[in-house]
Image 1 (cartoon, rainbow, N blue to C red):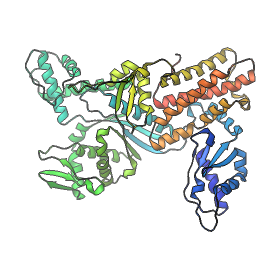
Image 2: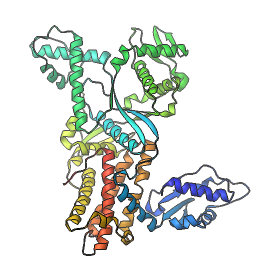
Image 3: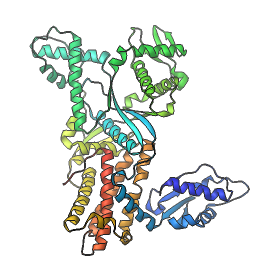
Image 4: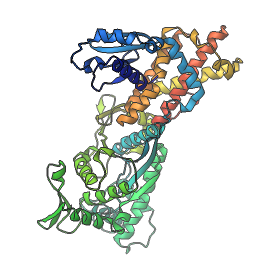
Length: 538
């Protein structure tokens, strides 16, 4: 049963009694003492001719035959009405999971197409841990949306032109010349990192007279290889790589300027072109083209979003770092001007990460070219731990990342704890097969034999999985999946310590194996949605 099914029944019940009500919610209960579902319906009854309180509303609901068939009890608590499902209804979850397997929780409704753009780091250096958190979030969100019925395209926007790329080429040439004993200055705001010195080593002798463009292109290609290799190791893949330089070559930036001018949304002041973003909620208007005729970042970004809109997606999602927070209003203003509802453009700000080694904060060196890369983090703690720690906190919350905890092979480390639960379940299933228990035996088991409180608790949590996924796809927040699977792992570890799954009682064994099979399936799917591996053994 889903919240929507119960809500539809409640609407029918109160409407039949001619009780006026406002829009209300039905949602999965946060704690087991509040049952399986809760509603704020009692707060939404309109106080007109008929006065009805929460207790009377509960009595009315309890008198309904459908409610009696599906719920053990209905109770009022501080104005909210809580619903407790019957165990027989919960047992049906086992058969549903066993039959659907990997498709359990997958939405059958088609919700449209979505383009999610994330990471999009300038090809001027390796990916940092900030880019890594965006990569983990974007990949997980994409998987959740696909499981929820969306057609998803993942795109990386390459800022591969402009002043920063010019500086990259100049810096690489200087490193190249220095390697050969020649004097060369790296600009103050250029690139001084070791990675650029390593790239300079790859250029053969005899290229001293090559112009900056050669060095720009060489650096971009090499750094893009590094970025793609890091993302591959991290388990993040893109369907499309969109180049800003190609956008400019096609004259799309000039075209968007003309479109805004035709709409009367651009004016010239102090030799610069300004976009009237203040008409759309921005605190002031913004420059698109500077006095020296060079474009600000905003101009090509608007042209890029026009391209996205023209491709016909139903929803656009951008993942940006906190340094882009001020950009949100401007880009939404541009989308509105271009005829795309700002409500269909979702911009998620992914906050920064601070690394700790135990209680000691790791200094992010400010010396030029020195920073901790995603690759270095993966090499130390592994891709799985890196991703899980990135995803466990909400995207809009600052993250404190404890390296020592992430490396532990103990129950203190949440990702180890979860993967160990998955492997333990897998080994139980394999052990049962060795004892001659077949898949048919498990599927045809008497699930009503699962009467222990921990068994019912696990079943209720498994039943909530489709709701958890749907909530994640609706709110565009993936941390609740991480919290869900950690909670599920805890329930299973506790259950395993108290009860033997495979024992002399074959009927009980088959029932408990069905429970373990369902748990392993849901845990496996949860790990997949987060982009975390499912180990065979530990």
